[in-house]
Structure formats: structure tokens, C-alpha cells
Length: 236
Image (cartoon, rainbow, N blue to C red; front, side, top):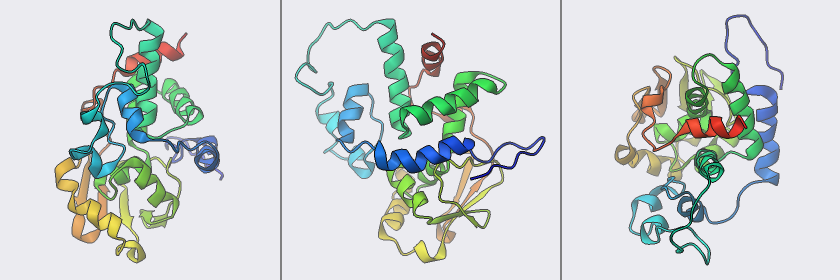
């Protein structure tokens, strides 16, 4: 896919390379194991399994210790590198990215003005699959990525099937007419009240439309993330 570069206009795609990785690595390097193990490993509920994360069946609530036979050992000392690595893994797994995809986003965030860590998180929040999830059209980012990949959504009237597509202020994300009868999407919209919609997004549930009223800022992310540790990790 070619990207047209115009002076003063931000790229709408996070590089051709990222878009290609979305296609190739989804098939070749997609994680197929238990996502509940990821939450337990990072010692943080990442909300990777939709409604189950809010129920009594949540594995993180039932077994809040790392997976594996040594998960319940106490007194383990973690090095500074280990702490930084865990923070990077936490963010990468939260957004469902491969190592290559995450590193490409970091490199672009590093070239932007401002704080690199904040730039990285804001850019990840602007991904189309994340916006679909934040608007409530899906129960998880994994499900949102599936919906986007199958071209269920249009942005400003144009069909977009690339999860790494970067949303900008003023964009309109709409569910296609032919996809409005999908039960999984309608069930997710009914449960959106529980999760809430960020202030920089506006959902018109009856019309299946989401408006991007602004760009996210660091304060909009309420998850306990220390992005500076990721910057320190990649600076070594």
C-alpha cells in the first residue's frame, strides 16, 4: 500500500511496514494460548477476554499469581531490566501487538516532538482496532481487530480493513449497514455502559456511529502503565 506524503499532513498509516505486519504476523505469529495467563504473568488485568474479565470466572481474580509451577514462589528479586521488560510486555500484550509492530511504533514515537513514552501510548490509542474497542463495538481488542480485518467498518465513508490505521480528530467511524445485524457487535454495544467511552470519542449507539472529537492525551489512559520504563529499555 502506498502512502502519499503531503507537507503539514500526518500520515494516516503507521508505515507500510506496520500494515504489512498486521497481515503477515496475524497469520504467522498470532498468540493462540490462554490470554488469562498473560494477565497473570503481568500481574494486571488487561481485559483481554471481554465479559469474562468482569465476571467471577476471571482467572486473574481467582488466581492472582504468575502461571507455571513456580508462580507462587515468594521473595523473588527482579532486576531493573526485568522490571522494564515486564512493562514493555504489559503494553504490547494489552494492545495485541507483535514485537516488530511494537518496536516500529516506538521508533516513530521517538521521532515525534514531545515525550516519547506519551507519544507511544497516544499513537497506540489511535489505532482503528483500539478505537473500535473503545467505542464499544467489541468486547476486546482482539475481537475489534477481527471485525476491522473483515471490513465491517468505514472511516469517513471509506472502507478500512487495516487495524493499524491511525484515527485523527474529526474522523467518523461507522459500522457498515450490512454488518449491523451481527449479534456479537450488538451485544457489545449493550454492555458499553459498564466500560464507558473515553472523552475524546462520542458514540451514537442507535446510528452505529462513533465520532472522534479530539485526540487522546496521556491523562485519558487510566491503566497503571509506566511508559518511561519502556523508553529506558529501548535506550540501552
